[in-house]
Image (cartoon, rainbow, N blue to C red; front, side, top):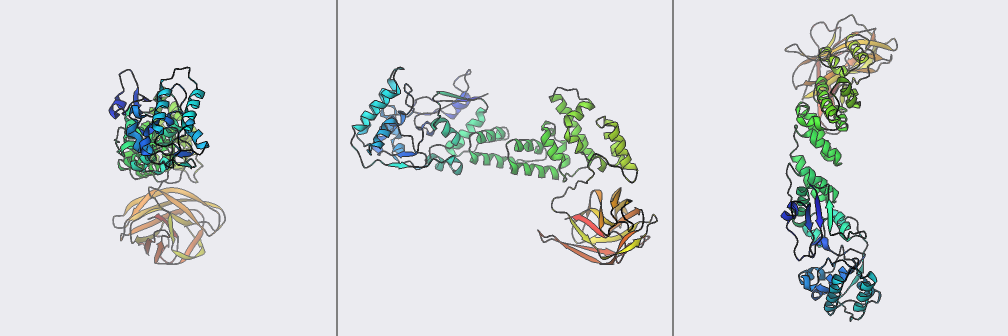
Amino acid sequence: MRCCVCLFQRSLPCSPSKMAAGESNSRSSCLNLSNSGPLGNAPPSNVAHSLPASNGGAAGATGGMNRSAGNSNPLSGPENGGGADSSVRSAPSTQNPPRLSVGQSAAAAHGASASGATTGAASNMTATSSSSSSSSSTSTASDASAAAVSSLPSSPASVLVYREPVYNWQATKSTVKERFALAVGSAVFDAMFNGGMATTSTEIELPDVEPAAFLALLKFLYSDEVQIGPETVMTTLYTAKKYAVPALEAHCVEFLKKNLRADNAFMLLTQARLFDEPQLASLCLENIDKNTADALAAEGLTDIDLDTLVAVLERDTLGVREVRLFGAAVRWAEAESQRQQLQPTPENKRRVLGKALSLIRFPLMTIEEFAAGPAQSGILTDREVVSLFLHFTVNPKPHVEFIDRPRCCLRGKECSITRFSQVESRWGYSGTSDRIRFSVNHRIFVVGFGLYGSIHGPTDYQVNIQIIHTDSNTVLGQNDTGFSCDGTASTFRVMFKEPVEILPSVNYIACATLKGPDSHYGTKGKRKVTHEAPATGIKTCFTFCYAAGNNNGTSVEDGQIPEVIFYT
């Protein structure tokens, strides 16, 4: 359905219900802009012209003379209810003054001002202009206007003021009182009906605006009433943006924020990106980060566009296993294939996924997850499948075309602590794990360790890292991977596939089993190490203790695992 705006010369505006319903079943919905409505004002100019209260008819008449010859005067004189408007027109305009008609321009040139005696003459001018035949010309109307005004006595009650035009002054007014004081609540409407290129048509179609949304816009402009709901909020937001009413835009966005949930986060994210609402888009992404599994299960996922899918898969903060992301991407690809009228074959799914496929972090899956799902989907090429299987099973690991950086379902800045004050040479490995026990003073998430590398120059190491719950001997997180070092005494990052939650006052064991040549090692270790976050001032205190059993010599004072990488 589409809306239209009808310009009729009536003494009263049409009701909103009539606008919404339309005048008949065969017509578009329309808005009647009557004589007294603010959308029926004469075109604006850089000159303000004020009249005494008794001269309401003159204001209506002279204002109408600026329309093309043969058209009815959109502003009423006394015979058409102009007296009812006189109190409005008599007040000096301070923001958006009406344009001077031909007669008013002539009077301004001679330094004259209209007085109360102009009422009868101006009324006659209006009647003449309204009833003239189609052959009447603009010059005839101008001559009559100039002659009428030039014969009128001057009056000190009239004022001529030059004002600079202000673009979209409506955007600075948040209440209806302020907007009515300036005649109209939309810069777009102001240009449509009062600007230099104002339309002369009696009906203006709005084909891309829903009647319910347009009605909500009008109610807001004329009464400050906010009438939006789940079914109309998006179309109302579109309409408010189209007609430059930022106050109503803000109400729509606030409504969406309050109703944001995991099951509609993807749909609202698409709309926020479409309507260029970065704050709303950011809130949607945060919601998806916190409730990734629920958001992926929602039906709205399959309706999003490719760019939105890519924006989500690029994030490092999604809190779900990678195999679940792959399954969600396949669901979306099936729906997109149908939208493009393609058969949902593996080849077409890969085609519609495009860049999104490369954002699935297959190396973060377990070999079992990969073998049961992606390897058999047909979406990956044979070469990609072989390369990923080699990545899972051999060391040193071959290069793969997919991202192997872990996702972290945490926000904030990565932190790290170092427990040694000095570095020495020659720490050997024979298959025994280096281990150190630790605890913290508040909840954190460990994402990896920093390890020492070779003393013999650039070398590749195979390594298995683990975090073990001491009391239950449960492995909470691990990764069987590798790293390359450059022969320096620096530490080299080895990350877990997922963050490992560490609770306060609970003992854990950090474990690293390396295969490779002799390495550097740390000395002068500290039993307690405190990290203070610069932005928040939060202090994280690590307490290290000796881990009983065979630990390859690592202790509080000496050994491996010099660095813990974490988020608070």
